[in-house]
Length: 103
Image 1 (cartoon, one colour):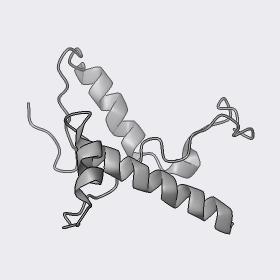
Image 2 (cartoon, one colour):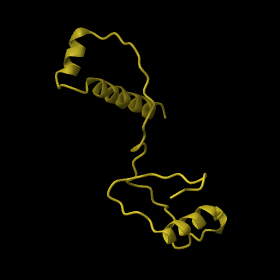
Image 3 (cartoon, helix red, strand yellow):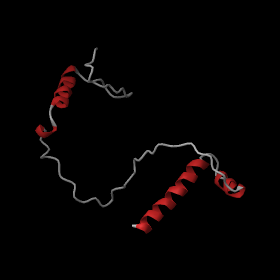
Image 4 (cartoon, one colour):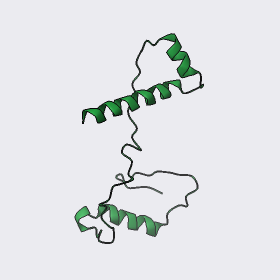
């Protein structure tokens, strides 16, 4: 099966293949301008309590060299693999607390 140049295919195991009829329906939807899509059956969200900001945030990681006291590094490593992630989480928590204080 050939695809249109503008189509992007994503293959996920375990999901049944689309029929040609379904593909045609998707092509029509993609070609429809946003202003012509009826969203009247979708309720507007006005209550954002319980939402988590940054839940799916995936920052770009940067490699750095950092000098730490030996006892601090040992403490981070004592729980095993993932000490760099733990260090990142500790620093992120501190950053967020400082931002809240400043706001």
